[in-house]
Image 1 (cartoon, rainbow, N blue to C red):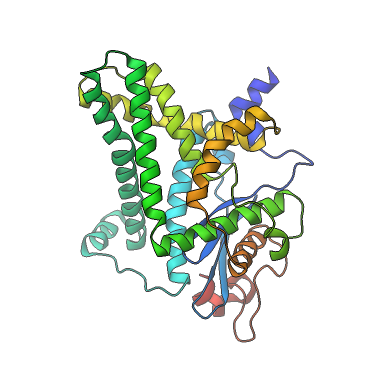
Image 2 (cartoon, rainbow, N blue to C red):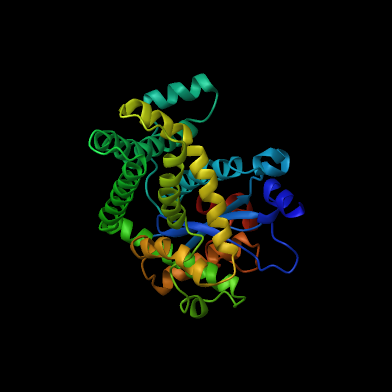
Length: 345
């Protein structure tokens, strides 16, 4: 009974005494974002070759609202937070790396005035909504539309949903492959590999140095890529069991959209379990598909990228001397006050 309570309340996801420190993150433009137990940090290498960074305290909604840690809900909440925070970090990293910030449009400025928020927040919300619409349209609505056509030829609900799942996975893999061929994205994927190597270095209790991080794999079982692969596979089972079997494309799409939170919630728990499970043949088999797709979404980083990833990780863990100090430039806004704002904030 206590195990069920731990699972239901999300206590099983919280670190226990003696557990290794866990961290995770994402690659950004010319840098890496890392999330530690208390802080989330982002470190970026500027065109001058220097590393600049900023961090903030983590938002822990489940501490204030315990029901956010319940099954399904925790997966959806974490997905939304990661999407929002990830998009904002990407925008921030571009500015930190020296790129000119995009000017809000007249519509965004007007919306911000009406809603009494910053125009930048309107831009962020628009970017998140657009990303969701494109992802749902490309990876769920398009395959579901194909399913409705297959339904006219095939009676079996199971076969139709399996074929729809294969189409969904195929579209996803094709999209990832095409994106990986872009030069700028390839550099982001190299930083993605640096992020994984740095996290592995931490989890194995090694000193956080470039030399140590270099020896680890760029493929990590708790990666967001693995989460997306799990979503694709779990969706086949959930849509088969609970989704509409109608040949009407609108009925099928509607049922899939309603079931997406269930898919995301279950996939989140599966990913967390795989990241914590003891190594055995069954666990390795379940991890394998996600790790194989990571061969596309990650690339071997160079030492300068590992240096940035490790700086971000150390800063997120509040370790001393995380960010290199330069003769004419303070390391962070927290260390040097307003004088560092242009570099760290």
